[in-house]
Image 1 (cartoon, rainbow, N blue to C red):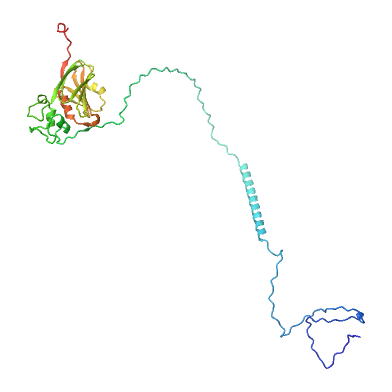
Image 2 (image 1 turned 180 degrees about the horizontal axis):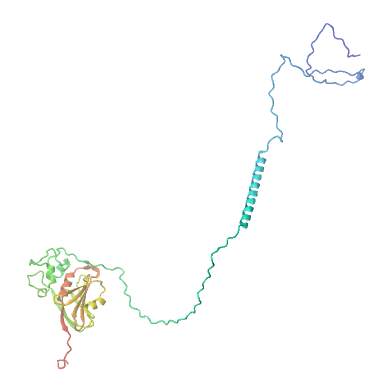
Amino acid sequence: MLTTDFQKPPSATLPVPPAQGIHIFTMPERYRHGAEGKMHEPEKKTQVASHAQVQAPVAPTAPVPTKSAIPKKKSSARKWILISGVAVVLALAVGGYFLVGKKQNEPVQISQQPITPIQRPAPTVETIVTIVDEPVIEEPVVEPEPFPIIAVPGVDTDSDGLTDVEETTVYSTNPRLPDTDSDGFLDGNEVFHRYNPGGTAPGTLLESGLVKEQVGEMNGARYAFYHPSNWVVELDGTEFVLDTGTGEGLRVSIITKSAQQSLREFVATASTSENVRQGTTKNGLLFFQSDDQLTTYIDLNPTVGAVLVVKYETGTNARVDYLQTLQMIINSVQALGAIQEPQIGEPGV
């Protein structure tokens, strides 16, 4: 028989070891004598460690936070944004309400200025006027030259008053000698007074054969004038054309005017030049000349109202190479009187 009462030897004193994983089985009395026993684990007792059994402290482990302990940052930020937006909307709504209410409650200021009535013009009665178109006489329009020619004076190498072209083609003088015949007079001055610049004075141009006299009658007046012998004279209707052979030329015509109209009045209506100069020819005839000296009006016969007109045409050369010759022709003009009507009894009547 197994009993639990046992006596400790009196001489043996055993130390009581600490209960470290030691299991003690006790059998209750009811299970003795063949009854089955069950293992009973005694409660663990707190042991006080001695100095020799002190162990190193174990580092504490951080507690694992649960899901409820983790802060929800994103949800909190969204809540604040939503709350702020709602607050701003409420603030704007309240402010707009008060602002609109204030505007509606303000009194309307009515202008004290008197109202001026609008004056309407009296109705006008329309008058229907029938305009009858009168025939309009269209005057011929003179088209300006698309490329106007500006004339320049010819070349005068020796500065004697005659251009080089005049000296070589008309008077056979030296264009490098101002006084070809050495008589003390410049070549151009002698031509102006109708003297021969290449001969001994007092030889005239007509006597030398360098010029010829043109005599005729037209528009009730008889006339005469000189022109260079080598120039070609052609009659073109009621005017003469003097061809120099170098592209330039002169037109000579006779125009009638009223006997009561003065030459100045006639020139004022006939000339296109703004300025004209008055002069007298070597034969004592009154004339007016344009400021460019290219058009001359000579009072040929005041009694019958005849005016001799000399126009200088530069042609395509755009040069005035015969200006002194033109002055010679003007000084040579003669008024030979009016055309006399044939008398009864004269031959051929």
